Image 1: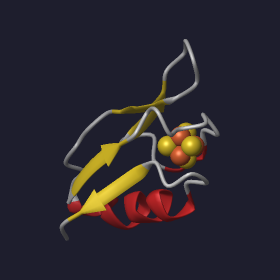
Image 2: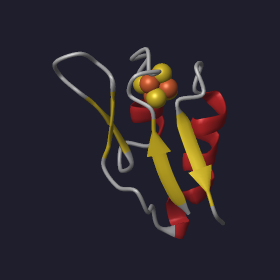
Image 3: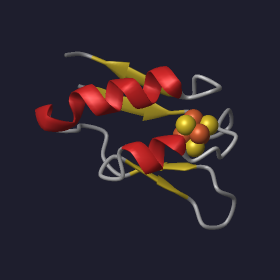
Image 4: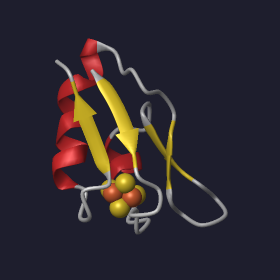
Length: 65
Ligand code: SF4
């Protein structure tokens, strides 16, 4: 699994960082998403996919298994 984020699209809702703090964080300056890893381990793949699905502006892209 590979993860990318579009910080320009992110509106800083913070739901991804709350749901999967090992993968997503929020920039303290503007609240936008910061990616902590581009390659989450398999134990995080389901939660990461859910975070992408629930992002209100589709700023998270997940590819691969
Ligand atoms: S859920 Fe989407 S909009 Fe909210 S902080 Fe994460 S990437 Fe940004």
